[in-house]
Amino acid sequence: MEVKGRVVQLLQMQTGMGKKGPWKKQEFIMETPGQYPKKICMSIWGDKVDQFNLAVGELISVTVDLESREYNGRWYTEARAWKIEKTSGGNTPPPSDEEPFMAPNSATDDLPF
Image 1 (spheres, rainbow, N blue to C red):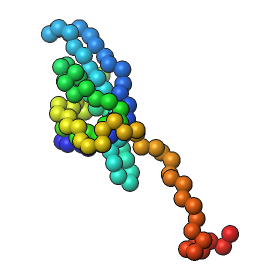
Image 2: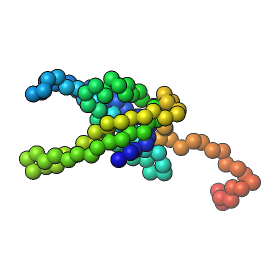
Image 3: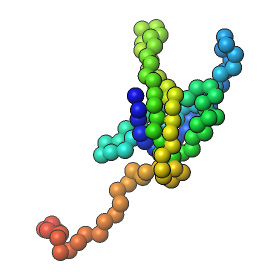
Image 4: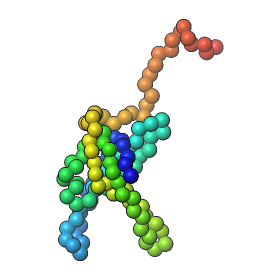
């Protein structure tokens, strides 16, 4: 599955020791474009953390694998990124939630007040 959007937050890197040796995981939040943008938490594992070197504000295209696991009767889903391509417009500030101010145009403003 491929998703395009902007990196809006990098979460703290997690590290640990497993059966196969040390591991590291970087989670990040990306926001999709459109009228109703969605925020998605994705993860990068192992050497790919250093390979992709993400920064807040970058426009990216991410190829992910979705995986769900059951634990104690609950299901947990992870979106694991395995390919990231940076697109144009990198390192620009994240979009603002505020709408831009537009001065009323008296010629077309037909409001009665």
